Image (cartoon, rainbow, N blue to C red; front, side):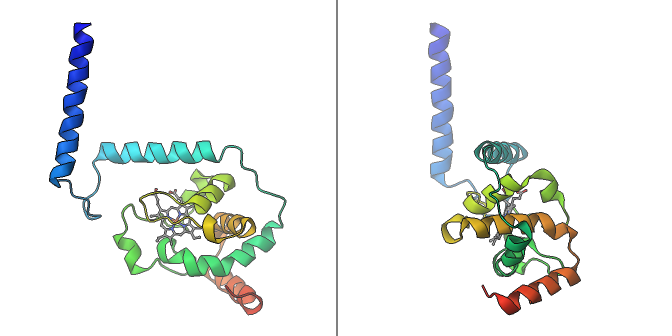
Length: 175
Ligand code: HEC
């Protein structure tokens, strides 16, 4: 019983210490100071497990993938490429100051890591405290699936193909 009491006191003292440290304002909240390695690993684990678990039962509805994908192009160009880049377009300057930094969309790494359902979930809900916005509140299911399908397609598009597809769809459909 005695050791349980001591353990409770130790936990309490640590918690009080953490709270006091936070309250003093010594912690640097700026985006210019990276997390400790351990903190980053913990946050990544929380993020990855959350995305996997919340997107488990999601299946793409019966949509014309090519159609929703091309309709998503002007939206991507307007909303995503400033942070993630696009074939022939570098991300905007402000994206270099984001922490965590937005992953590059064209190199294919992100698409290897996440399947369509997970990409759809991320686009719909965003990711807390990262700058990745939630597009669910402002976009229809069809548009969200279009953005997910386009995200998957982007590493396979050349700058010319991207530009042509954009021109084609923009002449018939504005954002
Ligand atoms: C203001 C900047 C910003 C905009 C705009 C933005 N994102 Fe993001 N996005 C981020 C950041 C930052 C992350 C990284 C989050 C992290 O590290 O957990 C991210 C992560 C992602 C991821 C998960 C990738 C991964 O492996 O972590 C996907 C998929 C994604 N964004 C797609 C999109 C799409 C599609 C759009 C447009 C509809 C978009 N984003 C718009 C900043 C942005």
